[in-house]
Picture 1: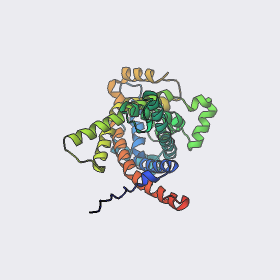
Picture 2: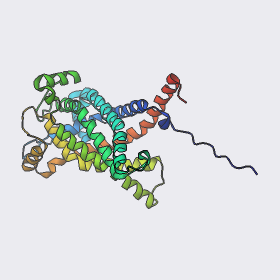
Picture 3: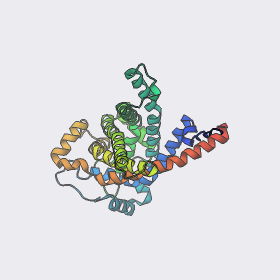
Picture 4: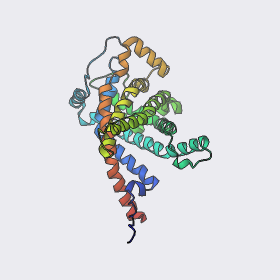
Amino acid sequence: MSEKVEKPVEKTAAQKISKFGSFIAGGLAACFAVTVTNPVEVVKIRMQLQGEMSAVGENIYRNPFQGIVVTFKNEGIRGCQKGLISAYIYQIALNGSRLGFYEPIRLTLNKYLYPNQESHHIQNVGVNVFSGAFSGIIGAVIGSPLFLVKTRMQSYSTAVQLGDQTHYTGVWNGLSTIYKQGGIGGLFKGVDAAILRTGAGSSVQLPIYNTAKNFLLRHDIMENGPHLHLLASTISGLGVAVVMNPWDVILTRIYNQKTNKYKGPIDCLMKTVKIEGPMALYKGFQAQVFRIAPHTILCLTLMEQTMHLVYSIEKKVLGHD
């Protein structure tokens, strides 16, 4: 009787693709997602600036959907997509940092903590969370000038003026103007707030995802597969929004200021709470949720498609198997 020979498991496109290819695929997926969610991001920025440093809050943008309608009526489709090019470049920088720095940081920590074991195969939750958070922070620092320009472009409006108004004709005009006015320091103004925002979001993203996934599996609510991963990612996105929103409000206000209204993120936090109350830290929360959830879903869904697309190009050009 002949022995049953198991067929080798076919590698997926994600496993076959090169490091550079995965970076391109991730960047493409993120850019597609940003195109869809950018109008919500514009509204979120403006909601976070409503009633700044005032005990009586403005209520021009009441929710993300009404806010998009108001923006479209006043500024058209271009107004809804303000800061889009800057958002594209920022996403590519952030995605590249996460892909490029995550694994080296993880392996370095594993080698230090487990000197007698093969570092590639160790999956320590604490190490993974720290590596994800730290690589995300590196990306936030590198991309800070672009996020600065994006924020100011998205807050600018001739129809509804909220907070300090700074007009840039484009990304390069924004970067060059800031550099002329404040040098390198000007380009990285508010980077401490960016570190706090990204660190807060990244530190809870993976733990919430794993907790949600394990809970759904343990209670037989869902089976392991794409639908489970999508739901767990959405729950994780909601958790990230709750933790990150206060720091996002602070980041928006520090980036948008033309004067020295705030000395830093902690000063901004204290002044905002004192004058506007604690709930001011959750301004734009609805828009935050409606940005993160679709962005997560689109990124996960589109990643599969962009991986296949980039791999097929690599296969033809580079002759990969």
